[in-house]
Amino acid sequence: MRILERYIVVSVITVLLTCIFVFLFIYFIIDILSQLEDLLKNNVSIKLLLQYYLSIMPVMLLRVMPFACLLSTLYVFSKLNHNNEIIAMRTAGLSIPQISRNVFLLTVIASLFIFWINDRVAPSALVINEKIKIQMNEGKKQSKTKKEEIINYLTMYGLKNRLFFINKFNLAAKTMEGITILEHDEKQNLTKKIVANRGSYKENLWKFYHVITYNFDRNGQVIGEPIYMEEEIMSIPETPKEFASQRQRSELMTIEQLEEHIWKLSRSGARSVIRNFEVDLYQRFTSPLTCIIITLVAIPFALRMRRRATGLSSIGLSLLVGFLYYILDAIGIAFGKGGILPPLLATLSSHIIMLVFGLYMLETMP
Image 1 (cartoon, rainbow, N blue to C red):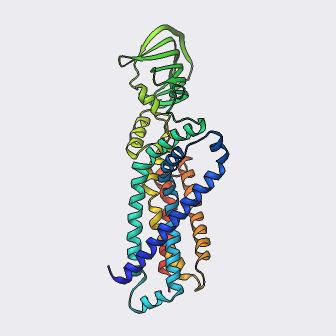
Image 2: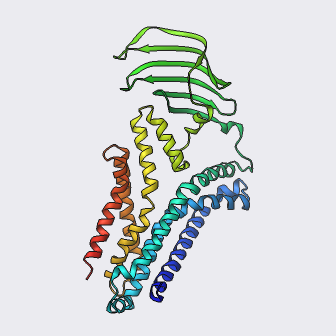
Image 3: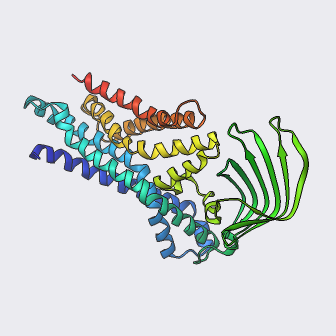
């Protein structure tokens, strides 16, 4: 690496790390002050508070990294432009891609780092954070109580095209209460409805009690009389752990878990639910691209700024570009989950628009 390239990269890294530290520090201060009364009321210890913010740090890092990349690139290149260093470099025969290639390499490394955190670190950190949040709200240093092992109003799309509605599910006791199961055919027509007061899982089998079964024809009309049984062993392949896993949100799952969850849902034919999870899955792969593309947009912006446009102007412009990027991304995700766009295209749309815009800005550079 040339001395000139090293100078630019070190400057960007220095500002990048400073931005990350400042953003995180401001967030922590605001968050502590906003809930200071509750912290004092619940007598939360310093140790538990540190654990809470350490667990939320990976998630916050994912949120601030694109803005940090944008601001650091804008600041460094606008400063180089302000000091006529860009003109000197171009006079020496260096093109804009040559000047900025190592900065792009840096953002690629940052994107890979974000991808790893988003898949391997953030989901488990969020789970830990939610547990600590419960302890802080209760003012205790204990883990979940038995009450928290009970899941109320659980809905699950299972295998064999079944939709489960469960009023109360107890993971520790492996029991469920207030059970309604709707079975569908391949065209999603209702074929059977099973209602039971209670169910228990023993010896790898589900046994339901006080079971009423309704059969339906293709027109949705009940066939014959409902069948009542005091006890019935049900052919349900899902285990209690698989039922309990349905309460997980997509952000609490790794990519592997999301793919497995989507595969299970695909057997049920629940297209709207599957589409939402597919959008969340593709977003795991496309969101790290933000750092690369936002840098591509920032460099021509910085070089087109007036010579005095440094400092606060860089901050204001970065916020404007970042806000626009966020709006486009939110619209794309909404279109994907609403079925207007395919999931993959929905997650890529904002990146494609900003990539084309950034390439156009570079191409029209004087």
